[in-house]
Amino acid sequence: MVQLGVKRLCVLQSAICLLLTIGFYISIGRQAAYSALLGSLIVLVASQYLAWRLFKYSGAAAAKRIIKTFYRAEAVKLVFVALMFALVFIFVDILAPVFFLSFIVTQATHWLASYLFNGN
Image (cartoon, rainbow, N blue to C red; front, side):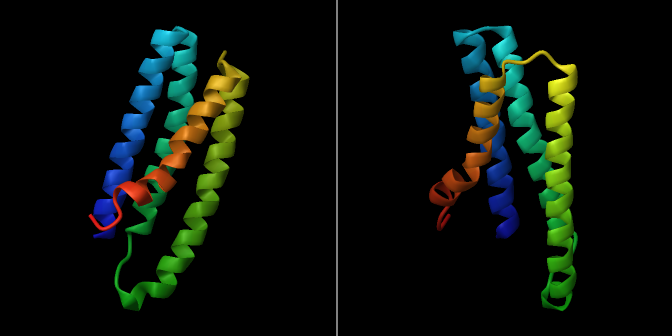
Protein backbone atom coordinates (compact mmCIF):
# COMPACT_ATOMS: atom_id res chain seq x y z
CA MET A 1 0.00 0.00 0.00
CA VAL A 2 2.80 2.42 0.88
CA GLN A 3 4.69 1.56 -2.30
CA LEU A 4 1.60 2.46 -4.34
CA GLY A 5 1.56 5.88 -2.68
CA VAL A 6 5.23 6.37 -3.50
CA LYS A 7 4.61 5.42 -7.13
CA ARG A 8 1.74 7.89 -7.29
CA LEU A 9 3.93 10.60 -5.81
CA CYS A 10 6.62 9.94 -8.41
CA VAL A 11 4.04 10.15 -11.19
CA LEU A 12 2.67 13.39 -9.72
CA GLN A 13 6.16 14.89 -9.43
CA SER A 14 6.93 13.87 -13.01
CA ALA A 15 3.70 15.48 -14.22
CA ILE A 16 4.48 18.69 -12.31
CA CYS A 17 7.99 18.69 -13.82
CA LEU A 18 6.57 18.32 -17.32
CA LEU A 19 3.90 21.01 -16.79
CA LEU A 20 6.40 23.48 -15.35
CA THR A 21 8.88 22.86 -18.16
CA ILE A 22 6.26 23.27 -20.90
CA GLY A 23 4.66 26.25 -19.16
CA PHE A 24 7.93 28.12 -18.80
CA TYR A 25 8.93 27.24 -22.37
CA ILE A 26 5.70 28.72 -23.73
CA SER A 27 5.66 31.78 -21.47
CA ILE A 28 9.35 32.75 -21.21
CA GLY A 29 11.47 30.57 -23.48
CA ARG A 30 14.04 27.81 -23.71
CA GLN A 31 16.34 28.97 -20.90
CA ALA A 32 13.40 29.19 -18.48
CA ALA A 33 12.21 25.73 -19.52
CA TYR A 34 15.70 24.30 -18.99
CA SER A 35 15.90 25.99 -15.59
CA ALA A 36 12.51 24.56 -14.60
CA LEU A 37 13.50 21.11 -15.80
CA LEU A 38 16.71 21.12 -13.77
CA GLY A 39 14.99 22.39 -10.62
CA SER A 40 12.32 19.70 -10.85
CA LEU A 41 14.72 16.91 -11.82
CA ILE A 42 16.79 17.46 -8.69
CA VAL A 43 13.69 16.76 -6.61
CA LEU A 44 12.68 13.78 -8.76
CA VAL A 45 16.05 12.06 -8.62
CA ALA A 46 16.44 12.70 -4.88
CA SER A 47 12.94 11.35 -4.18
CA GLN A 48 13.57 8.28 -6.30
CA TYR A 49 16.80 7.56 -4.44
CA LEU A 50 15.08 7.87 -1.06
CA ALA A 51 12.19 5.62 -2.12
CA TRP A 52 14.59 3.02 -3.52
CA ARG A 53 16.54 2.92 -0.26
CA LEU A 54 13.47 2.85 1.99
CA PHE A 55 11.92 -0.19 0.35
CA LYS A 56 15.05 -2.27 0.53
CA TYR A 57 13.83 -3.87 3.79
CA SER A 58 10.35 -4.68 5.07
CA GLY A 59 8.61 -6.28 8.01
CA ALA A 60 8.60 -5.79 11.75
CA ALA A 61 11.80 -7.79 12.19
CA ALA A 62 13.70 -5.25 10.11
CA ALA A 63 12.34 -2.17 11.94
CA LYS A 64 15.71 -1.04 13.30
CA ARG A 65 17.35 -1.56 9.94
CA ILE A 66 14.58 0.42 8.23
CA ILE A 67 15.01 3.36 10.62
CA LYS A 68 18.78 3.32 10.19
CA THR A 69 18.39 3.14 6.41
CA PHE A 70 15.92 6.02 6.45
CA TYR A 71 18.26 8.37 8.31
CA ARG A 72 21.23 7.43 6.16
CA ALA A 73 19.23 7.76 2.93
CA GLU A 74 17.84 11.15 3.98
CA ALA A 75 21.35 12.39 4.74
CA VAL A 76 22.61 11.18 1.35
CA LYS A 77 19.59 12.80 -0.31
CA LEU A 78 20.39 16.17 1.29
CA VAL A 79 24.04 15.96 0.25
CA PHE A 80 22.95 15.00 -3.27
CA VAL A 81 20.59 17.99 -3.49
CA ALA A 82 23.31 20.37 -2.26
CA LEU A 83 25.81 18.92 -4.73
CA MET A 84 23.36 19.19 -7.63
CA PHE A 85 22.57 22.79 -6.70
CA ALA A 86 26.29 23.60 -6.71
CA LEU A 87 26.89 21.88 -10.04
CA VAL A 88 23.95 23.63 -11.67
CA PHE A 89 25.05 27.05 -10.46
CA ILE A 90 28.68 26.47 -11.47
CA PHE A 91 28.20 24.87 -14.89
CA VAL A 92 24.77 25.86 -16.22
CA ASP A 93 23.42 29.23 -17.26
CA ILE A 94 19.96 29.21 -15.65
CA LEU A 95 17.29 31.63 -14.59
CA ALA A 96 17.59 31.30 -10.81
CA PRO A 97 14.02 32.39 -9.92
CA VAL A 98 12.56 29.81 -12.32
CA PHE A 99 14.95 27.14 -11.06
CA PHE A 100 14.07 27.75 -7.40
CA LEU A 101 10.34 28.07 -8.08
CA SER A 102 10.32 24.76 -9.94
CA PHE A 103 12.32 23.08 -7.20
CA ILE A 104 9.94 24.36 -4.51
CA VAL A 105 6.76 23.53 -6.43
CA THR A 106 7.95 20.01 -7.23
CA GLN A 107 9.05 19.50 -3.64
CA ALA A 108 5.68 20.77 -2.39
CA THR A 109 3.90 17.93 -4.19
CA HIS A 110 4.57 15.85 -1.07
CA TRP A 111 1.94 17.94 0.69
CA LEU A 112 -0.39 17.97 -2.29
CA ALA A 113 -0.11 14.20 -2.62
CA SER A 114 -1.32 13.65 0.95
CA TYR A 115 -4.57 15.42 0.04
CA LEU A 116 -4.97 13.83 -3.38
CA PHE A 117 -4.21 10.26 -2.39
CA ASN A 118 -5.69 10.21 1.13
CA GLY A 119 -7.77 7.06 1.45
CA ASN A 120 -7.15 5.88 -2.11
